[in-house]
Image (cartoon, rainbow, N blue to C red; front, top):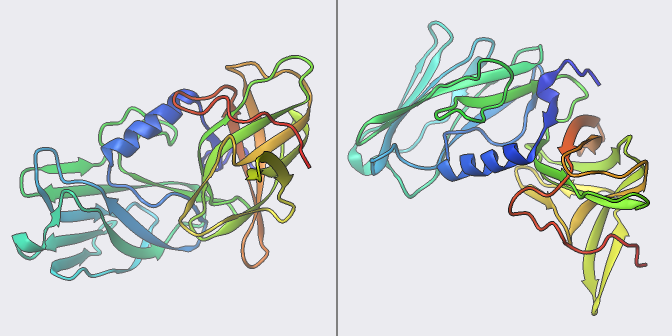
Length: 303
């Protein structure tokens, strides 16, 4: 794994998980979860979750294209005028033709354009100007360094362009249950979203001799756990949650106690419908984030 490809390495902390939750509540203009492989065609679907502050409807959306993104087309919307400017880096603008065609603040919608991403890994930032019946919101803030939007009030829409062999799966809200000296196993949990569909087929970590995808479910009046030898399906665009009492990563033969506040490096392996395999390096914090089910069910094999 090319560890200099920072966009391929996700480091989550409990604080970041909390901030991510806050961001979801604010509902910025964002792209769908997940990255894209270098040199690929990409459907950029900009999600609008609310009107501007104090407004009742969105009347326009203007997307400034980042350098290196080559536009091929944009999707028209009924009742909206579509303008495409190819001068400079380019801009795509949708404008409601009448107030009745505007997007109500209570409704969500996607504005879609298509293009090709650069042949080198990195982060693309799409700056989006949202116009409303009252005022406007310019989603254009870019972090001074790195790719985390935590702390930004009006972040631009972010797209991670990753190297060949690096998974485009979005991983968030990950954590590992802490353990005590002498404990042989524990669990790891996270939310996975594959933009194009994939299967989680393997996990490895230096913190444990064995790491497998397991499922816990009731059989009669007994909670049983079993390995998923064929892997865990991640349908395209759907978030699959690994959580206590359900799907999870079972870590066995622990190499030492995992204290709250420590971190655990982990490599996730995926396979797509064509059999192509990719991996993703993540670093998960030890200890449940605020609001998580820290107790869950005991991690014991019951066959």
